[in-house]
Image 1: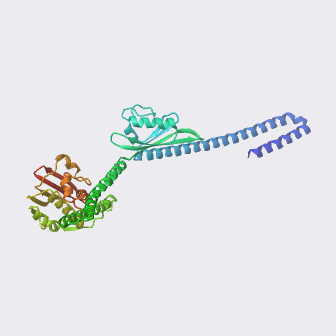
Image 2: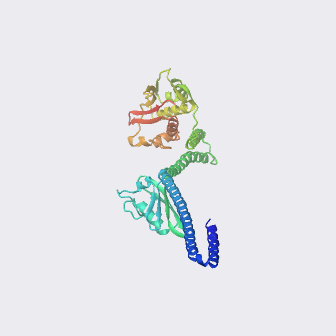
Length: 406
């Protein structure tokens, strides 16, 4: 449009110039006409240019507002994401200022003032030291921070802009359970190796004696053969229990729950142990309503009762082993009690741990694997239940199981 106006103005000016040459008498009129024409065209061109500028400004303003809205939206989204991350995270700029962090990162701050830089004195010393290293070294860092209540794997990722250091992204991953699991695994392997090595050493020693040239003691031979059989059975028990615990550790406890008569199941668990009850001169008492049924995995709770009764028999001589069950506040409460030796108070918190023995010499001699109560607790927990122990030296022990409805 503006180009056409320019061409039109040029043409009219040429025409007026020619007319001025031909008609000298109208020179003033033609001059005024030319002036008015050019002013009109200039004003029109200015109006068009102004309108174009206004349009461009409006477009630029709309684009700026759109970009600002997008920036605010992305900033809000980023802030929402960062604040909802379950682990502490922070961003340090090239001046060492903390320009972004989530709420859980503030757990590292012991002061009321919000942290604004890596040198903030309110930080836990281990955290402040790591922030300082991340800022000053300007490279990738991975370090385990052992704090009073938790262990964290601290990670620093440097950020570069045009190959120049522009800050660091810091992440803190809680690895307390992982490290504790590694400790338990190492201890478990060490304990299992020790438990298997003991009967193997005994068997090897007896076999070496039996294989001596000229050995001809039939009485000792028969005794050793019986001990070898006992140690072999003990090793088999340990291996079977280890296989059970391996499945439990891998979270492969699958329950096949059915309505179970508790009185019948407890009687079935006690039946194979009757001879041991007679040998230890123990009386068995069962106080369970025949009509009481509960949703249980029959096989797993058969092992629970067998392990608890076997455990009671190890430490009870000339006494009573009693099992009772009743419904209390919509939960089934089962108690397995004995009048045996009891458990020391300082040992009671550890008895459900693998391979723990409150009386190592006695329980090892009885052939136990030290894994029975760990299996009991795992099966009870798989049923969403709880188990606890109450005991007093010289007066006996009671295991209490509480099972909710499944």
